Image (cartoon, rainbow, N blue to C red; front, side, top):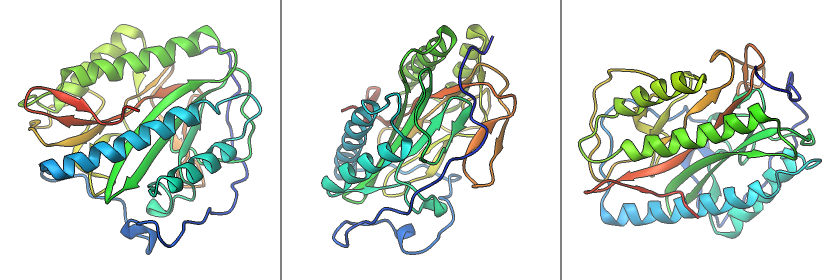
Length: 288
């Protein structure tokens, strides 16, 4: 039972790129179309100064995400939410990281119902019963902070509410597993067993990633069972961002090159935090 909802079948109209003042510090990909960051390799160990700047960018991202969620209302368009996020991030003297990253045209990602991730904000009004993932990343003082959450719009059916709640619990329990000398693959092993118990599927095409002065870097965080070697060490920062589906995990990418649509039309939900490994456990950097 995948529930009752308004299925997304195509992309809406995307407005023109929003401007960024000259005074705002921008990542290199703003000035030229660079490929996505390389996520293979040795994870970076950050020093105290870098970690403090990660805290600042993470906190701002979380605050913007929280307030974007208040705009997830029936009749509001995702383009309006994007406009709010864009201006709010600039007002904090930060840059909206998705803008121009590998050519992405907007400042946040908004993924509704059967869109798994990377939805581009457009002119579609939110409908009663939608679930919407809002993904916010900011670039502040040379460092990125990245987080997302799935919000309920109006009166969401029981299966939709179950999906969103189960995804949030999955993320929380995945973070609770982390700490120094824990294998990265413990995250994927847990998520796979969690999904089996809940009757859900993990959308395996998309991964968590290292983050810092770069938007995407090592390590790769797989949200499914794997034996890939790699150990968490204090000073590492990375995202965990499971996408859980009520149906099959397979997706297709639409002609815009970004929007990931479930092949069977089922809904998915996603939640994400940026996490720091400490000497004793973890610190969630993306809390408001």
